[in-house]
Image (cartoon, rainbow, N blue to C red; front, side):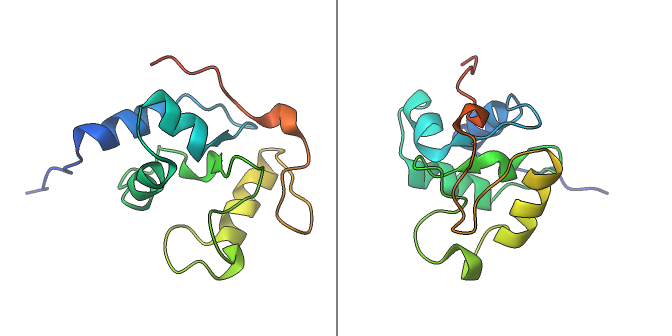
Length: 114
């Protein structure tokens, strides 16, 4: 018997927003948290707990265009490995410079339906 995946109402809202980000675009922890009247860290927490394959967590970056959050993104202790995140985004046409900064700001998605 398969057990039901349980997520909080907040996580459901975060995942619903994530599913709206089209391939080739990214959004930011800050933009999403502003929409949900929460904090960027709360968004990050929901992303770390994402149990669903169809929720594109790799499409969320820092508001300054940085691929990861706080600290050394190449050695992040939790969440998706940043090299894997970069690889997925590169495959979608989203590019970052050698310092992990988004190269094309028009890739940022803000057209969410809440």
